[in-house]
Length: 332
Image (cartoon, rainbow, N blue to C red):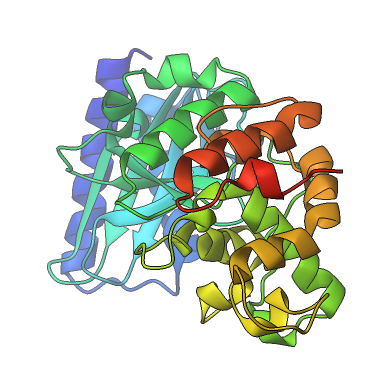
């Protein structure tokens, strides 16, 4: 069956289902609607030579396989043509399918059922535990046009190269001061964001020191003058987006007496400098351990582990005023 015949069949299918919906047909949910789609397909003469699988595989993409064609079924009781679709990695995609279409049943508002080519209705990527496509029937936006790559070209990429494209797209949508939380090139990365948000003040002292060291290393702008606005924003965002830790007073990470006077209770002097001196050891450990993707995200470039402290001092010297970090820190 050529594509034109298949699309004409889909138009007929949607007309039938739309008529049913507007006459009061109801469905328990998405699986009920999907079963109805299968029944209608099985009755269509265009598919006499193609068997319709009535034993759906819940983790298969797309939902219905018809030879080299596939149909992904979407359903909502709301009045919207938008829906979250499958993972960008498509690890469960049926290898026999070369062309995928979406059949979308919308019961809210004016009930209607429509179809569209899958690649033409993908408009966005949402990030949860893994990045997932978002589709919208009838949209004038196209994710793949925005990324400058076709769906077929995207599918041919490795997992790592797909994530390069997704991160590039996500970064293009960030506003000033926003950061990505999903940086890894692989879906099976060892890093995962905790499901619960923790308060910084409730952490153990060892964990506080570790996280302060990581944030200080990735965000050398913390050495800017005291009156500089937003100099701690990236450090606070790092704790929240990468570790799920909320710090309501970001300045207290580095300039409060509780951290500056840790090793010496005598008051006075540069509290930020004293706080950083106290965690030099932890910063060295972080420099050897933190993955390159984070340096790429926060510094804009990757540096070999053994060169990271020297580079941090160089960056910090460029931010600081009235003192020179490289003359005060990591002198051992």
